[in-house]
Image: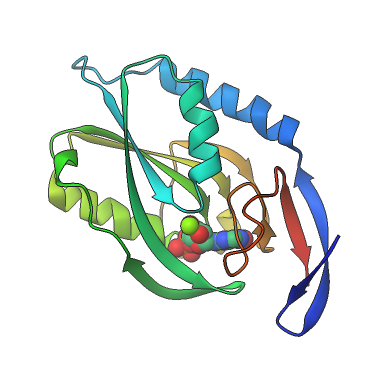
Length: 181
Ligand code: IMP
Ligand code: MG
């Protein structure tokens, strides 16, 4: 497959197949299931939209502890570049206060989005906070941020599919693919 990036036609290479993603998600879910909130309350899964939509949907299916679902919309990317400017496009649910929260994110790149969200959640006063990211680009981190659960570590290249977009497109691909620029 070839895709248009700006005025360039780029190749894409599949990095993780639907099956590989499924297997890894089941492993992450098993990890999460083994450490439920200590006080017996439900785990609130906070889905970072839109990127984590597919990951969250598949992960939640494997959770066998009491869960609730909330979502938040944040944006930092335009095209294949991080803008560095994080925008909260929806209000953070007030009811997260005092709750055990698992943030589900598609990818950690510079780490700025997750650092920003973490800060907001701590200010709101969550009881505990854990982060699950399908993908992580350790070489691109600009914030010292560490997810508690990571699906796959990748290089700096831009990726699409399985929720991840290029200007709103390609989220529907069932696999994760690298854009060769
Ligand atoms: P960060 O704030 O730089 O860590 O960027 C995180 C956000 O940027 C993610 O939630 C994604 O929405 C987006 N992003 C970062 N890298 C990629 C990529 O390779 N493909 C698609 N979106 C990405
Ligand atoms: Mg995102």
